[in-house]
Amino acid sequence: MSSQDNQKATNYPALYTLIVVFFFWGFIAAGNSIFIPFCKNYFNLDQFQSQLIDFAFYTAYYIGALLLFIFSTFTGKDLVGKWGFKRSIVYGLLFSALGAIAMIVAVEVNLYTAMLIGLFIVALGFSLQQTAANPFAVLLGDPKTGSSRVNLGGGVNSFGTMIGPLVISFALFGTFETINDADIAQLPLSKVVYLYIGVGLLFILAAALFNFSKKVPAGFSSEPIEKAGKAQITLIIMTILLFVAFIPVFTSYKSETSLTIERLSESLKDNSLTQDVKAGIETQIQALKPALEIKRMTWLLGAFIVIVGGLLIAYWRAQKNEKGWGAMKYPQLVLGMLGLFLYVGVEVSIVSNLGELLTLDDFGGLQSSQIPPFISMYWGSMMIGRWAGAISAFNMSPSRKQTMLIVVPLVAYSIIIGVNTLAGFDMSNLYYYLICVVIQIVVFYLSKDKPARTLILFGSFGLLAMIIGLLSTGYLAIYAFLCGGLACSIMWSSIFSLSIMGLGKYTAQGSAFLIMMILGGGIIPPIQGKLADIIGIHNSYIIPVIGFCYIIFFAIAVRGFLKKQGINIDQT
Figure 1 (cartoon, rainbow, N blue to C red):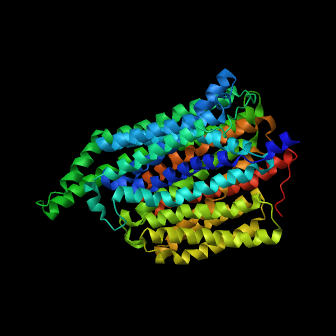
Figure 2 (figure 1 turned 90 degrees about the horizontal axis):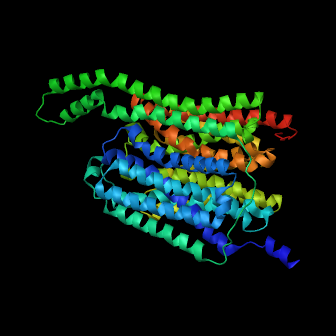
Figure 3 (figure 1 turned 180 degrees about the horizontal axis):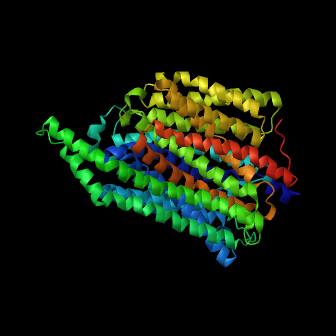
């Protein structure tokens, strides 16, 4: 009996060490939202180029998960299971520490491309950590309460996303006071070096705690690897085509036309030129730019089509002959992969482009140093929703659960306001955002803890918010776009759970495929960024509208697929 009790007892020392890793993911990922507008001004980038921060970061997740899948398929052994969850997390942390060193070097040489490489390496380590951390959290106690431990990690992750923008902002700007964007290029980056020295040391410290702690189990897994040769080939071809589509966009910035536009734009800074001469130069720029931007946008849409088309072709072929497709023979999994791709893309794209939107006069005309509270509130909105969503994982009476569903979001909102106020920011313009939080509470009540119903309601909430944001300006639009965080907060868990329902022995493989779809955070923000270069940053928010429309479609369609497989989801 004691052996059984020991198996059910939660290993709290190991769990507390593990949730530190969850914090890192949120802290760094949310901090990218501040890096983007800063780098745009510091390195004189267009909106697409600034979004390459997301491209480097989230593409690393995809590459890491894909390489693990390919290795496991070829060898017939799960590499993470063979190493053990403990050692895999240690390796991931050390790899992220290597990325922190690369970031320090990048800052010292003052090279944007090198910073992208550094972020890529950090996120590659995160990919390995995330592959091991979620099942490890379940392993650290009774499997029946595994979801609560994962939700605890998610709550700590969300806290990291809330304070990350504030810390990164201080590291970049050296102050919480307003700094004009025109002066950003003259700022020293010494504090960024200190930041990544600290982050790197924390990665190493966490790795040491994991490695030398006798209370953290090895976490070996001997689960058999299900073959999926056709799925593997499809993913490899998609990856190759994806980079083929991006290469012409990257090289176009060194083309003769692009260099000519750059030279002409530089000449406009010459104050000795007359207004007529400047007008003539601007006319030349406007004559050259549209064709170049449309060419870039065409290739980026090609990259998007590669992902969407590749998944839909896989779905169509698997329905005709399921042999060799592994988990991809299930329609809910393939369409769920596309759903996660779009969800992550929308979640990241809304906030990554928000800094540029807030510089417009119709949206406050803010400087980059003034946007951290809004970025913090967006990621904090994710925290509000995730903390509220985690309530259902705990065993409590219906009345107590309803009370907590009101109290927890309000407490989370107060924490966001309080932390930003302590940092010296004026949060009075975001006090009325409490109304949006109340709306989310109502949506939670209507969802009744049912994943498909929840996804439909929150998808509709996000869609309505984006439409309001597109059709308005000022704080109404800002609040609407910030509501994207509230809407997205529950989507990962809802899409994930619906996608792996009924997969049986293919559940682990299906989960790996879904994690690969974090790629959306690397593909969709640059697409919105380039669209913003063409039609303006405000109008570019049509991209999240499209994403939310598909998510609603998936939530409705998946019910039919699962019903055919004998799995009923009550949406009444």
